[in-house]
Each structure stands twice: as C-alpha cells, then as structure tokens.
Image (cartoon, rainbow, N blue to C red; front, side, top):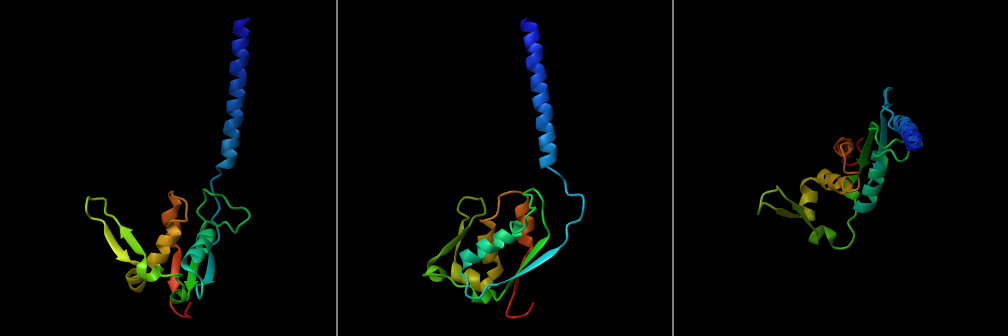
Length: 154
C-alpha cells in the first residue's frame, strides 16, 4: 500500500512541475518582433529635480504602456527640453553634497551639487533617475536613452 501511495504522490508532483513549467514559459515570453521606436518630449521648465526624475523613470520603464512586460527593453527615448529651468527647492543647490567613490580606501570624492549642475547637468539628472530605476541589466540601457536639449531647440 505504501508503494501505491508513493507512486500517486510522485505522479501528482510531476503534474504540478509540468504545469509550473508551462506557466513560466508563458510568463517569460521573448520578444521576437521588433518594437517600434518611441520618443517622448518633456519640458523641464519650473519642475523640481525629484518630481521630474520620477516622471522620466516612469516613461523609461514603459509604465505608461498597457501591455508592458518588465523583462523587455522598450526603445523609448526621453528628451528633456529646457533643463536650465529645473528648480531646486530649499538650499539644496548650495548645501547638498554628492559623493562618488572609486572603491579604494580614502578615494571618496565629494562635490557640491551646484558645481556638478554647472559642469554637467545631464549627469545630475541621470544620477537622480538611475536611483529610481530597477537595479538590473536594463538600467544602463534605459539611462542611455535619456537626452537633454538646451533652450527651445529639439
């Protein structure tokens, strides 16, 4: 009797495993067709850096699409118009320190946000957006699709 019970248990486990594999195959579909390229323009005039970064991260992850899959890298390019109009609330521009470490002891560098913003505004925005994106292989690809336009030029 224990032999028949063992066969029944192993058969039910095999069926459950088979169903689990079918479900995983359906969930992790690979994209075979080429996805259309999409460009989104966002005006940075009068928006704070954090609120603008949330919006940029939302579009870069394709969360505005109904049929979004988190494992698919959508070719969505986000362009920021008027980056010089981005607002920093409070005294952040003067007082906030940005730290960059090389991994070696004593090699941590610190910069004021104001000097980084004057030197490389795209780097400041990319750093803010990167902190809001998922920490996986797609993050670097998403960040590369973020571009700035000075003034009214597109």
